[in-house]
Image 1 (tube, rainbow, N blue to C red):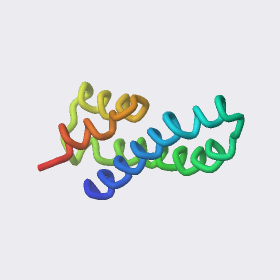
Image 2: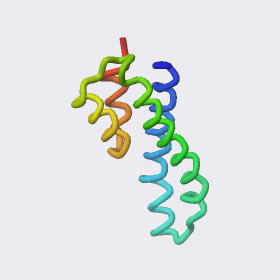
Image 3: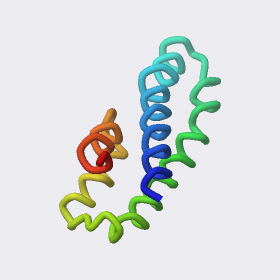
Image 4: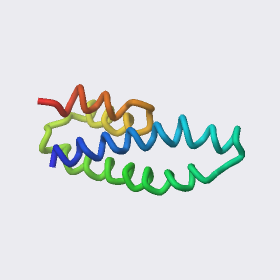
Length: 91
Protein backbone atom coordinates (compact mmCIF):
# COMPACT_ATOMS: atom_id res chain seq x y z
CA UNK A 1 0.00 0.00 0.00
CA UNK A 2 2.85 2.37 0.85
CA UNK A 3 4.44 1.87 -2.57
CA UNK A 4 1.15 2.61 -4.30
CA UNK A 5 0.83 5.78 -2.22
CA UNK A 6 4.36 6.80 -3.19
CA UNK A 7 3.55 6.36 -6.88
CA UNK A 8 0.27 8.27 -6.60
CA UNK A 9 2.04 10.95 -4.54
CA UNK A 10 4.69 11.40 -7.22
CA UNK A 11 2.16 11.50 -10.06
CA UNK A 12 -0.09 13.92 -8.16
CA UNK A 13 2.86 16.20 -7.51
CA UNK A 14 3.96 16.17 -11.15
CA UNK A 15 0.42 16.73 -12.43
CA UNK A 16 -0.02 19.66 -10.02
CA UNK A 17 3.22 21.28 -11.15
CA UNK A 18 2.32 20.82 -14.82
CA UNK A 19 -1.11 22.27 -14.22
CA UNK A 20 0.14 25.17 -12.12
CA UNK A 21 3.29 26.21 -13.96
CA UNK A 22 2.61 25.19 -17.56
CA UNK A 23 -1.10 24.76 -18.29
CA UNK A 24 -2.40 27.74 -16.31
CA UNK A 25 0.06 30.29 -17.76
CA UNK A 26 -0.71 29.02 -21.26
CA UNK A 27 -4.41 29.43 -20.50
CA UNK A 28 -4.12 33.02 -19.31
CA UNK A 29 -1.18 34.35 -21.32
CA UNK A 30 -1.71 32.32 -24.48
CA UNK A 31 -5.51 32.31 -24.33
CA UNK A 32 -5.54 28.53 -24.82
CA UNK A 33 -7.43 26.48 -22.17
CA UNK A 34 -6.66 23.16 -23.89
CA UNK A 35 -3.90 22.11 -21.50
CA UNK A 36 -5.90 22.93 -18.38
CA UNK A 37 -8.76 20.81 -19.69
CA UNK A 38 -6.36 18.01 -20.60
CA UNK A 39 -4.50 17.99 -17.25
CA UNK A 40 -7.34 18.98 -14.92
CA UNK A 41 -9.23 15.70 -14.76
CA UNK A 42 -6.17 13.42 -14.26
CA UNK A 43 -4.88 15.77 -11.57
CA UNK A 44 -8.26 15.76 -9.81
CA UNK A 45 -8.40 11.97 -9.82
CA UNK A 46 -4.82 11.72 -8.53
CA UNK A 47 -5.58 14.29 -5.82
CA UNK A 48 -8.59 12.27 -4.62
CA UNK A 49 -6.55 9.06 -4.68
CA UNK A 50 -3.80 10.77 -2.68
CA UNK A 51 -6.22 11.85 0.04
CA UNK A 52 -8.01 8.48 0.18
CA UNK A 53 -4.72 6.56 0.34
CA UNK A 54 -3.43 8.92 3.04
CA UNK A 55 -6.47 8.08 5.17
CA UNK A 56 -5.95 4.37 4.51
CA UNK A 57 -2.24 4.53 5.38
CA UNK A 58 -2.62 6.64 8.50
CA UNK A 59 -2.83 3.77 10.96
CA UNK A 60 -0.37 1.56 9.10
CA UNK A 61 2.28 4.29 9.14
CA UNK A 62 1.36 5.32 12.71
CA UNK A 63 1.04 8.99 11.76
CA UNK A 64 -0.08 11.25 14.59
CA UNK A 65 -2.45 14.14 13.88
CA UNK A 66 0.36 16.59 13.14
CA UNK A 67 2.09 14.36 10.59
CA UNK A 68 -1.23 13.38 9.03
CA UNK A 69 -2.12 17.07 8.70
CA UNK A 70 1.23 17.75 7.03
CA UNK A 71 0.64 14.86 4.59
CA UNK A 72 -2.79 16.24 3.67
CA UNK A 73 -1.71 19.89 3.40
CA UNK A 74 1.26 18.85 1.25
CA UNK A 75 -1.15 17.86 -1.50
CA UNK A 76 -2.12 21.50 -2.06
CA UNK A 77 1.36 23.02 -1.83
CA UNK A 78 3.61 22.90 -4.90
CA UNK A 79 6.38 20.32 -4.34
CA UNK A 80 4.65 19.24 -1.11
CA UNK A 81 4.13 15.64 -2.12
CA UNK A 82 7.85 15.30 -2.86
CA UNK A 83 8.62 16.53 0.65
CA UNK A 84 6.21 13.98 2.14
CA UNK A 85 7.85 11.20 0.15
CA UNK A 86 11.33 12.16 1.30
CA UNK A 87 10.43 12.88 4.94
CA UNK A 88 7.79 10.26 5.79
CA UNK A 89 7.67 7.50 3.17
CA UNK A 90 11.23 6.46 2.46
CA UNK A 91 12.73 3.74 4.60
